[in-house]
Amino acid sequence: MSKVRELRDAGYLYDGTADEPELAAERIKAKDLCFEFNYQTKPSQGERLSQIIDELLGKHGKNTCILAPFFCDYGYNIEVGDNFFANHNLCILDPAKVRIGNNVFIASNVNITTAGHPIDAETRNSGIEYAYPVTIGNDVWIGSNVCILPGVTIGSNVVIGAGSLVNKDIPDGVVAVGNPCRVLRKITAEDKNKYLVPPKCCQQH
Image (cartoon, rainbow, N blue to C red; front, side):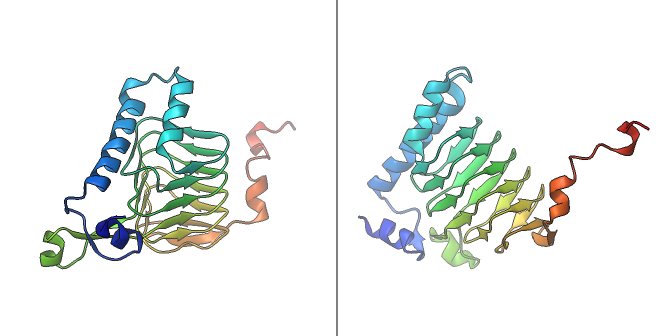
C-alpha cells in the first residue's frame, strides 16, 4: 500500500496532489464506469446498469436502485444495504468510507463528501487534504439538495429535510433540517397515521 493511501485511510492529512499511480488508476476506473453508467447505457438496459453498480460499489445489498447521473471518486469505499434508492444526480466523494444502511431513500441532487481541506490557505495550497468517513443508519430519507460533510454520522429512522447542510451527527428517530442541520422534532407514532386518514373534504358525511 502506498504511503499516501495509508495516511488517507488512517484519517491523517495526506497529499492529494501526489503522483500516486495506484490511486490515479482507481479514480480513472471509477470515472470510466460512471461515464458508461450515466451517458452510454440506456435506462432500458437494466442488466448492464446493474453490472456497472456491481463493479463500482464496494458492497451493496438487495434491491439497489441508482438513477443516472451518479458520480463518485473511487466507488469501492461505498457500502449500501438492502432496498437502497438514489434519485438523479447523487454525488459521493469517497476517499474515506461511506456506509449506508438498509431502507435508505436519497432524493435528487444530494452530495455526500468525505473529503475536506485545511482552513489555513498555505497548508491547503500545498495540496494537503483529509478524508473522514460518513455513516448513515437504517430507514433514512434524505431530501433533495442535501449536503452531508466529512465525519458525519446520521442515525436510524431519520428524515433529513430538503436543502439541509449536515455538518454534525444526527441522532436516531428525528426529523432534522436547516443550514446547519438541526433536530426539529422526534418522529412519533402520529407520523405513521398522518397519511392514512383522508382530509375532511374527502370524507363522506
